[in-house]
Each structure stands twice: as C-alpha cells, then as structure tokens.
Image (cartoon, rainbow, N blue to C red; front, side):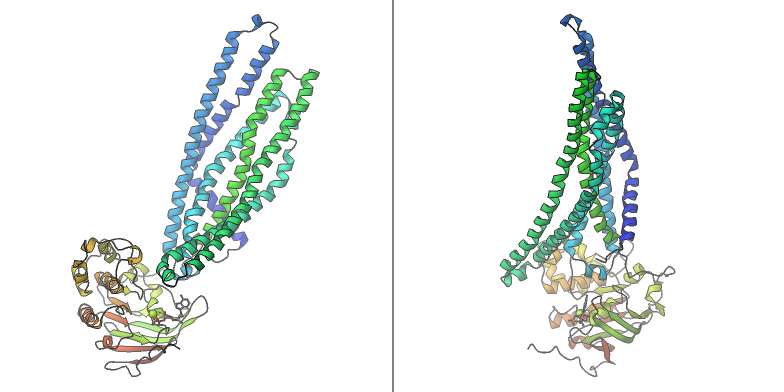
Length: 586
Ligand code: ATP
Ligand code: MG
C-alpha cells in the first residue's frame, strides 16, 4: 500500500467517518431520542427511592407509614424501570441497525472500488491483506458506529441528566464525585494513542496471517509435492504467534481501561460516601437525600465504565478506517480522458500503432523499450521471442491492463486514452497466458464477458465449437452446467485454455489476442483451432503470442521481441531470425 500523508489521512478519516454517520443520521437520531428517554426514566428512580426511604425514616411508628404512598413509590419505580428497559432495547435496535447498514455500504463500496483499481495496485497488495481489510477491518467500523456511538451518546446523556440531578441535591457532593475526573482527562490521550497503534499493529499481522493462509491454500499441491508442509506450518505459526502477541498487547491496554474507568468512578463514590456520610451525621444532609445521591452515583457507574469501551472501540475503528482509506484513496492509473469517444461499431477499428512505447514495472524492471510497431487493421500478427522478452507485457497494453510508462499507442489514429475504456475492451477478445476460471458453471464462465445486448456474436455453441471443447463437454456429467472448482481446478490445462478461447470468441471481438493460449493443446487441435479462428477473424485483427512454429504458418507478419525490444519484423513463410529457444537449464 502506498503511504498516505498524515494530514491528508486525518482529513480523509474525518470526512469518511462523518459521511457514513450522515448516511444513517435518521436512525442515529431516533436511537438518541430513545437513549434520552431511557435515561430520563431510569434516572428518576433514585429520587423515588430517596423519597420512600425519607418517608420511612421520618415515620416514628409503624402507624405513621402511609402504605399507599410507599406502594405508589414502588409502582412508579417498577413502571420507570420497565419503560427504561423498553426504550433501551429500541435505542439499541436503531443504533445497531444503522451500524450494520454502514458496514454493508462500506463493504460494497470497498469492493466496487477494488474493481476499479488496476494491476499495479494489486501487485503491491497481497490478496489476503485485502480480504482481511474488507472483512475484519470493516467489522471494526461497525463496532465504532454501533457500540461506540451508542455508549458515547448514552454516557453523555446520562452525565448531563445526572449532574443536573446531583447538583439539585448537593453541589458540594457533586464536586466530590467529579474530583477524580481531571485524572481521566489527563490520561485518556495515552490510552487513545496506545489503542490506535496496537490495533494497527495487530491488524497488520492479521493481514499477514490471511495472506499466508491464502497463498498456502492456493499453492497446496506444490507444498505437498515438495514436502514443505513442516516449513509452511512453522512459518504460519510465526506470523500467528506475532498476531497473538500483538493482540495480547492490545488486550492489556483495553483490559486496563475498564477497571481504570471503574476506579475513577469508584474514587468519586468513596469520597461521596465518606464526606456525604459526615454531612448526614452533622445533619446538613437528610438520609433521603444521601440515598438519592448514592443512587445517582450508582447510575453513573455503568456509563463511566462504558466510556472506557467508547475510547477503545472508537480508536480500534479509527485504526481500521485508516487501513480502509488506503484502499479507498488508491486511484487507478488507467483512466480515460474526459473527452474520450465511443468506438463506432460500424467502422473497422483501424491500425494499432505503438509509438516509442516503454514500460517499466513498479519494481523498476524495464519490460518494453522504445517499441515501434504497426499492426494493420485486419492483419494476423504473431509475436515471438524467448521467455521473459516482454510479449505478455506488450499485449497487456492493448486492452489497457496497464499503460505505457513512455510513448503511446493509437488505434485507428486515436490514442487509447481518448477511447472509452469499456468500449475499447468490449472490442477486444483477450485470452490470457494463465487461463483463469471462476468457481461457477462452465456456461457462466464462457459467458463472462457477455452483457445484455452483447449477444450478437457467433453464439455459445459456435464459440465452443471453434474452441474445440465440445467433445470434452460431452464427457462431463452435466455438460455446460458442470461446476468448475475454484480457479477451474477440476479441469485440465488444455480444457481451461480452450474455455477461455471460447469466452473471447463469444464476444465477437474485432481484435483477438491469444497470449500463448494454445500452449497446453496438442499440435493437431491447435492447428484446427487456428484455422477456425482465421475464418471467423477474417477482416479483423488477430495477435498471436506463440513459441510454436506451426502456429506461424497462417500469419501475415511476425514480430520478434528480445529483452523488451523488437529485434525483427517480417512476414511469413519463415521468421527472418527465428526466436531463440529458451536457454537450456544449467
Ligand atoms: P513468457 O514467454 O515466459 O510468457 P513474456 O515474453 O511474456 O514471457 P513478460 O511476462 O512480458 O514476458 O515479462 C517481461 C519481463 O517483465 C520479464 O523480465 C519479467 O520478469 C518482467 N515482469 C513481468 N511481469 C512483471 C511484474 N508484474 N512486475 C515486475 N516485473 C515483471
Ligand atoms: Mg508471457
């Protein structure tokens, strides 16, 4: 992740927290009204208790006790307690629902944003880390808007009401009760910082744990084949231990905070009991008033402890928000110009021209250097070159999976940036070197790029036939509806490749790119597929990245790359300088 400047982060954090709060302000407001109601009711109880005790205390004999009055107090207390409980339940329903809603919106927003980002971002970020952020960190945001907001409002309301009531009984005792609070104000900054930093550290290690688990599960067959389970287990335990340690460090601060808050309240209570008791003995305070005041102190105990939760859950949420802002603030490099034009579907695409194109990866590897290349409209071009020479990098630039670092690419005379990105990509059938299938049915995988109104192509049956996959499908129990496991694990390499070819062909593309897409297919099938492709791509542009000579028979032009530079351009029958084979293993 790219670091964000502290001041920018602070503003972004404030804005985001406020924006999500505002998005659910109606529920929060209703929740707050219920919180005020519950406190107004619950905090009237001490006065009722105080009065009834006062009445009992004043009675000299049993006959002096007004039973109806005492019963009245009892019923009022019961009614107030019931009303307060109901209002509290409703306050939780509204606030927690709002927090769930925010969590839902935020998670969707994050995912939508991730879909807009491009390859360099994903190269910098581990998948496990991203997954951890959009699952765990988002949960902390829910707690921030749920528990933390609820208790922040509740504690504030309770304090305002109780301090008013306390002062009405005795302002001196109120001051005693509040005497330890300056200590809270002095120390809370330390707790805030400690919880923030320790949460950040713990969440970072959780990302490492997720990334490690994710990578190990994805590469399980390699791990088993190379007997590296023990090593991986030890490596996993190491990050896991670190996660435990960091969480314990966080738990120590969080754990200390609640008793600390309770003791701050407790010291106040002690002072009130001691000094208030003195006043009762001296006769400056009645027993009823003393009981009432003690009731208020008790009523403040929970909100005071809850203040500790607010501080801890809030700061955990803030740390999580900062981690999420690293995703939300990442911007795609590949964007279209504001005046980008749609591609006219009735006109040929035109020539594809590379002008002094250089591409350096984020780690500094220069994969392409000063490429000048023209792929004429309707041509069949092969790109050859030894492994690592930059062929895949070159074809990535055409659907703009990346943009060149220098130079430009034009299509039909227009720079690619000036063409609508979705429109451009919909014209291109791209078959990547590593075929990727999603864990869904074969049909859904093949129809992946097909959207409403885009089913004008050869049709599913024909696409499957061109890709020579029909035979394999017949052998599958559920044919097209067969579910392929994660990443297409249940299929052979050649089957995956041919399905990704069918996927590209189905879009009826005007520019077809096959990046070594027939490497896992036998030579005879390869020849048949190429013949079929040549037929349907008649008059359209095809780019074939290949290592195989028999694939070169039908092409119009061959471009040879070496170390990111074009070394030869020529036409069939034979490449002027056949691509050098990969160096033999040492
Ligand atoms: P192959 O025939 O093996 O598929 P290729 O010609 O397609 O090779 P590319 O994948 O384009 O080669 O890679 C060109 C160079 O760029 C290589 O040196 C490679 O190590 C480097 N490279 C590729 N992808 C990245 C990346 N994401 N980050 C950094 N360097 C990369
Ligand atoms: Mg490649």
